Image (cartoon, rainbow, N blue to C red; front, side, top):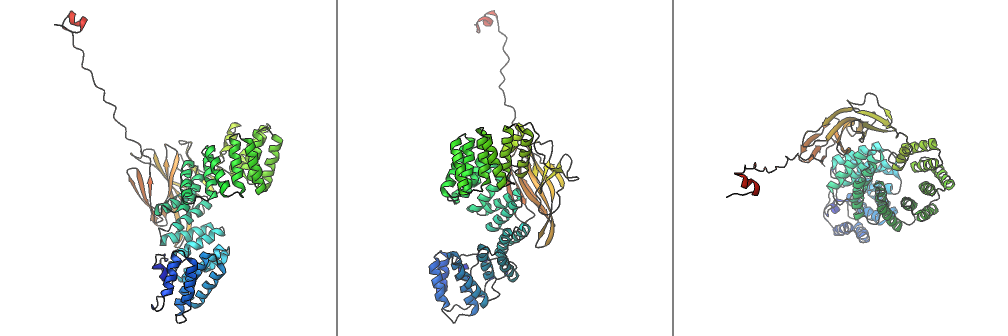
Length: 549
């Protein structure tokens, strides 16, 4: 996020919250060129803006703080124009003239971040925040830099601070959601992406991101809906078509998946993944010639595309070409030993050869690497083997019939009363979760339950704070509706259960509205009209003919 001068702010640009980030206002004087330049910049007329800022800077009577503002704004224009060297030079001039100008450090940091000079960018964001502790954009930008370096926890702390300062910042909400997704917290990610689109229904990136998070939680139809919305805002994005195609595959809609992968290929013909995925869809539809052709194209584009080799192995296995299949599976594993699809493909080949123990081991390894890989799970069950467990039991973490298991860094709560339900216990910091409370909601929310658990300790601007989460569970559908922040430090959420929904004034300072499935009230049995008791006939004639005289 770039920050502009007060002149531009008057034209509708956004200034950061908190301490001042721009030089103080100066005399009106001969600044008509500067105003014209600001208007041109806001309207996107970059070349005109650059020329007009240059003319304004020709006035040597302007004080240093005013000249710094103009250099900053022209730097913004240069940056948007893609003239990076010129932008850096203008930002440097602005800093020389006015070293306390926080916005220009933020802008230079943003440009450096775009040029992959991430650590230098962080130094600029640090300086901007020192000068203006309430500078939300600088916190958000620094968070993005931490993500680049793989420091998710620092990124989350910076995004949290940016959101505290500007709770309606869609960019910060979306950024924090992406950070949660990178840290394997899809439910927390969905929460932030939903907040972003509720703030701005036209913020396309959040729909795409929420679709990815829903895909990670096996909500395939919901993911398809979000990807469709994202495509409406960005119809030229091959990546979104690929993502929606994957969601269609997971939902067993092969025809729609094939169409989306085809569109992605039209938009990005030099990418290997869409060809590999379309080949997989063709193989599922038993169009083997088309599948092999797609795999060959994927490998031509990227000879190291392990996914293409894995899928081609499976296609050969379906055609009983087992030697070719084994060769392709081995090549996939050599290219990427951590590929879940490669282990699954080799398992399919081993199963076809009658090597059932080896196949089962491959399928189990595939599920360890990719727990959502349905093909591996189905194959394991077809061998009569037990499915992979949820990991080691965490002693003392359960409550009543609930128990907690750990697999790698992930925790899940299980209850034998609900065999199809696995509640993901997402942690916000180090430690293990512990279930604190399980409640079944009264009517009219029959079948809705809330599971509260400890979620570790997170670092915030106020220092370390303990966190508790509450998962809202739909027992009828055995799904997780949402995971909410119930407590953070000394702040506790307020829950308001209303007709068909619950309002959660979250402990992180934002209120969420969640629609819930309600049990319909039982209708009274239908009223059946009672026939009057038959009248005794008066005489024999009436009994025989139904009437009498």
